[in-house]
Length: 276
Image (cartoon, rainbow, N blue to C red; front, side, top):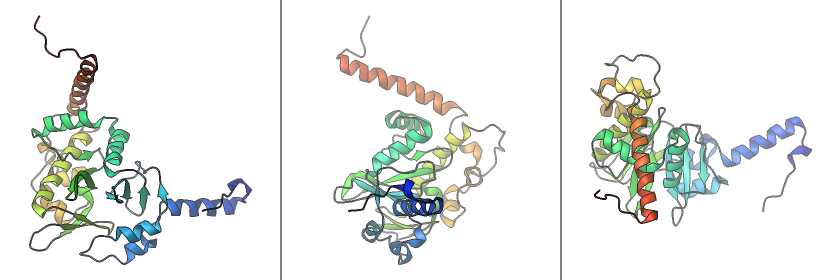
């Protein structure tokens, strides 16, 4: 058990050092972790070793760009949240963290967001990417538990490794972290494409300056230029982003209001369609 320490008893310099040590316990730098340093190019990061090196936190940092959210534990009730230079171990499921990320950046509930995105992409999707104007996260279900997802930032994928195009695929991120995805490469490319278009839709909604319609999606989103991201975004320009500026939030409000009415009717046990 850790001993309680009153930070107010410290001098100014000692207090800075104490706060730095506390932050490093909850959000250690990747370079300082053995699990990161011993990682091999074609192998996923050792989560069991990583678990030993991090103090469990109760919340993620949604202000920073997230590189990956990996579920962990016997019942997957905890998650590793990877950022550019550090990582957090959070006492929360990966799916819940993804929904909290959506709420933090867009202030949207997941069901309304899902219906809006399906409408814009003209496709009924089960694997819904979470996105904001700065980055996106794509979900990949676990074979052992299909309702649990691993979330990966497609804009920070450096490379993909697989044997004879079979699953699992080892996804190498630009920060050097390797994540195992239980999919072949082709469906990964498909989901990356959807995520990039989703991010484009949301970024377009906040633009205040005119954009050259022939600008490549790679440049517009300001994602990492890697062999993988260039392949997925090849020949896709700003003008290919579905819909029109400011339509997404307006359409979301329509779906959100309809959902509220549906839930209210369900609680009141009233018929939804009644002939007059």
